[in-house]
Amino acid sequence: MLLVVTYSSAARTGLRNACRRHDDQVARRFGRAALFEPTAYGAFLALRLRETHGDDVQIERTEPFNEFLAVDEAVRDAATAYANRETRSTPYASFAAGTDYPDPDSLRGREL
Image 1 (cartoon, rainbow, N blue to C red):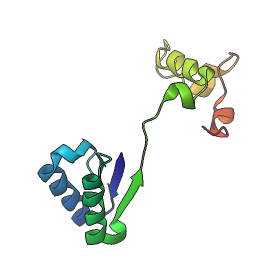
Image 2 (image 1 turned 60 degrees about the horizontal axis):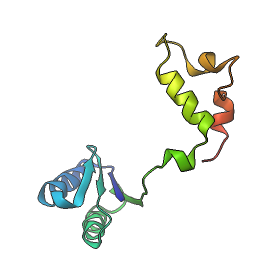
Image 3 (image 1 turned 60 degrees about the vertical axis):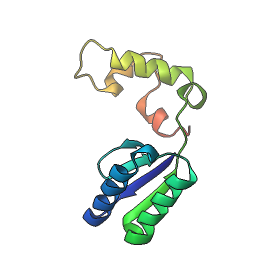
């Protein structure tokens, strides 16, 4: 996928118009950003926006996130348990304290 992010109102207008005219090349829209299909035409649309709006358009190539390959089981289990906690106002650091779940500081320093 190609992630196109815009940083000015003119670039956002251009992105919106491109998405409307070429919706078959748009996987998802996020307001000031969009995911274009990974095709030569998707790249053409993204590059045309950057050519028109310069540094107000950023293009990144992305790949889908596979949580089972990128993240170990302890992190997945912690996310599931935290999402299903009884008290919604409990911060993760307090939730993880005294458990086998990874603490937030160790998660911050760990690369995927």
